[in-house]
Structures are given as structure tokens and as C-alpha cells.
Image (tube, rainbow, N blue to C red; front, side, top):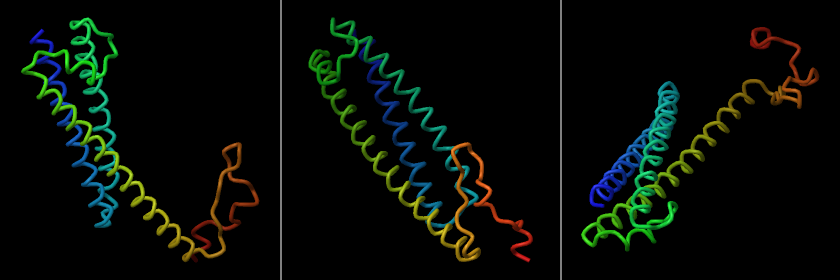
Length: 165
């Protein structure tokens, strides 16, 4: 039982570490946007996607350890930590409770930072659209029709080179 519980604790620690890594990458993204480092933004997005993959793998591993402990304790495989923790050996309960609480806190922070970054990036796109509209007034946005093509009435009759002169 102690080995299974120890494995669960280590998986919770790893999950916590990876959420912290994601928060750091999201902070970096925010700095990149604020400092207008457009070239670094694409690399940052790739880092965020890679970290999301790592988190998904770590979470699956933690869930497997959680199921193993639940089975060992005679509980349902999908037993939550609220059900699982009181059944653990007494000396593990505070540690598991603290790790679960820290994981939940960090997950909330990651979610908030993601929302902040989404708003920040949306605002940057709006500003870029305003710039484009100022450079090419009256051009209107080009949108795709249901077939995935530009409607002929929405396409400019001039190439970008001809429009700029």
C-alpha cells in the first residue's frame, strides 16, 4: 500500500511541477506580447502546446496511480481525492491533501493566466486590424464563404503590389 501511495504522491508532485512550468510559459507569453516581440511569440505558442502535451501525459499518469490506490483500498476506480484521502494511511493524508490543494490552486492560476493572455492577444489582433484598415481604407475584410473560398465580390481587383503602387 505504501508503494502505491508513494507513487501517487510523486505523480501529484510532478503534476504540480508541470502546472508551474505552464504558468511560467504563460507569463513569458504575456511579456512577449507586452514587449512586442512578435518573432518570439510563435516559439512561445509552440512551447505552450508542448507543455500542454506534457501536462496531459502527467495527468494521465497521476490518474492511473489514483485508480491503483483506489482499487487497493477497495474503492471505485473513479474515486475522487475527497473519498480517497480519508482512506489513506494517516501519515500520507496531510501531504496528499496539500498536494491536491496546491494542484487545484495552480490549475486555477493557469486558467486565469490563459484567459488574460487570450484577451491580450485578442486586443493585439484588433490593433493590427485597425492598422490594416488605416493603411487600406475601404478595402473591407475578406471573409470566406461556406465553401471555404473568397466570394468574387469580396476580392479586390488589384494585387497588393498594385494597390501599394
